[in-house]
Length: 336
Length: 164
Image (cartoon, rainbow over all chains, first blue to last red; front, side, top):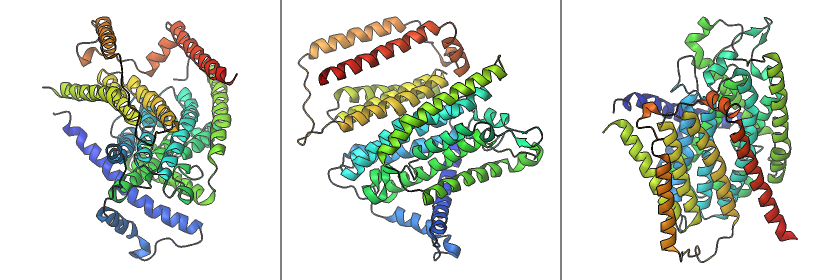
């Protein structure tokens, strides 16, 4: 059992981070969307509405847990767990600093994508088990979206992996420390612009975020796959959604924005505040997701499918070819 | 009982019960869920034997990809209003004999290849695997690709055949 005990604190820390993150992000979302829509967002509960989310969490916890007649009980109960657990697992490989992480995985990047790809399974289960047509349509859309966008998402990050020569997230960050020619940060966002654009589009889709939130389109499908869920079961689905945007944004920071490092600032200065730098960068990414959410209208499902299959995948493949040739010419023996 | 054997036992239970659910469930969505549990357990076995990369790929390709695609296909199929159709096999004994024979073949073929303990497990990371695939195993790798292509072409031919 000795191997189990040391694993407990990091897991608890991840759950704590996930919960805290959920509370902060819900407040942030309301405020950001509010201001984007020229309104104020929550103002009454606590100073500047700060305690509003806490009040909502209490409401959610104390609400009756309704199980409608006709649901597939076994799957209905299991679905929120299947949505929640992979979201939690996705924290395992994230490097918050040189030393602060739950575990260092040689295949960290692939691992994070792999566990995130399990979330739609829970979404489909929820939609199917609810015995509700809105929920079912939401689940169908989620499945179609997942199949269409997982490929470009993975293809978009391959150039980064080809250049670094590793799937280890910490090594990807280490590769981006320092500056080129004394002025340009060695961030991949500047070197691999097409990769970054492809990653952002596919990530928005993977997150079911506007403009790709067809699976829970509230103006058409009530709440999509989560329509029949109430109380903390709904809370778990909700929490997982916010947690996923944190994880994807953190991945963007690691892959394209140098992780916990900052250009022009020596490592010794950053080391004590590295996790804060990482979280701050991640939150900037989340803010941009919210900005997009507050600005763009939802696309249609057929437009989404066209974009994924006919544009993103071919472009991603062509870009991999180009990067592959350049990498081979620049360093015939391999970069690493 | 060591921690390793407890984990192994848990994975085994998940794999076997997932397999049983896949075969015996009446509802086709539940069958898919059973298959999902089985595939997750297989990914767990890979990680257990030290092949983390393979485990992660298993999770990604089979559960995130293939299983989601299967469930998508199941959802597109009409669900009969009076519950699921009754699936009764008229070849119980023959099916059991075939399954038993197959099981015996797999066990005989794999005996001697499965390591006795975790220490002797496969430790191939992504680098070793890709070097093998693009080096000594290139022919095998390409043959796998050609086979899949043949399957795809066959599906197109079969589906196209109905239109004509």
